[in-house]
Image (cartoon, rainbow, N blue to C red; front, side, top):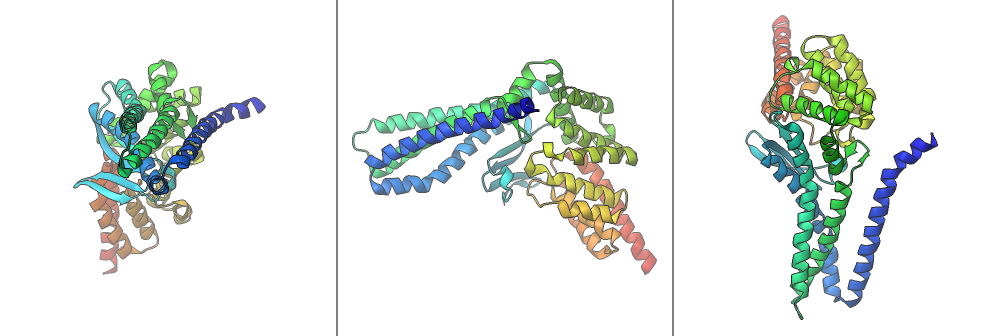
Amino acid sequence: MKKKSLKQLKVPILLAALGGCAGFFAAQSGLNAAATTPFPIVIAIAILFIPSFFLVIAMHEGGHALAGMLVNFDFRLYVVGPFLWEKELEGWKFKWNRNINTSGGLVICLPTDSKNIRQRFAFYAAGGPVGSLTAAAVVWSVYKFLSLMTTPPMTLQVISEVCWIMFLLSLLIFLLTALPFHANGFSSDGARVLRLYRGGDVAQFEVLLLKAVSVSSSGVRPSQWNRDELKEALLLANKINAPMGIYLHYFLYHYAFDIGELDQAELHLTDYILGEEAIPEGFRSAVSLEAAFFYAFARRDLEKSKHFWNKYKPSAIIPKSSVLATEAAIGLLKNENERAKEKIKNAFQEIPNMMDRGIAKVLTERLQLMREQVNRDRERTS
């Protein structure tokens, strides 16, 4: 038991050590600079620190986005701190990111096909650390160039010091993301690249999972997914104890739900719910939302549906269409037909903005069934 605990603590200890070293070095540099730097420049640097940090994050995530586009992935989401841009039907749309768990930065690029998926995804994963290393080289070059000036203007002094800070931050993010580790539901970029290139069961599991994502996101509905590959991936996940294996229950749940095997769908949904701790915290609300919809629409169980709906926490990352469809399904159970009708109408309007086009197809059909139920109920009461 003690060995397991020590193993689990290795990653947090390593990250804390790296962060501590970087913090100490940055603090020492800051104190030394403050002692010889005019006070107005110190104030300016302090004000610019947070924007500089976000810019460093933006360059790391931009590396992922550029790499994704180079391998023909569909670039759909870009998050930097409180700023979020999402690709919708009419183009890119800005939103405020209120989810603290994704405020560190996030890019979502979806594969549109499974051709050479292992190599392409490894390239995409490596894009972030490469972006950070490139950013570090660029800002260090600017810093060195400005440091050659004997008496630079105050503005250039501020830029020089900010570049030094950005260099340290970019280097730290490069190290933290390039080192292979897994913690709190997230794998580092280095861990992803290593898993994909070392082969064996780990790489095979990763490839099968990525194929499932690419097939669904390209518009193939769940009933047409390869169930044998999903089951193989689940067996591999159990064999290698892969934290991301929890997502196989999500895919198998949707497959069973779409072909009408509701008991089997409920079993996979239950496993999905039980394993939600392995899912990054910012995405866990999607589990509760999925359960709330299933019990309202498929099982017509108002109490269970309300139980999971009350656990759901709004997130800009979760499709609005799924939220509205769940509200509509619950509304129908509560005989709130007019409210359900409005939710269904709004959900239809949001369907084109869903990232997962395969799930969008089945949700469209379910919304149509709910709309027909509203119309039938209206005819009976008129």
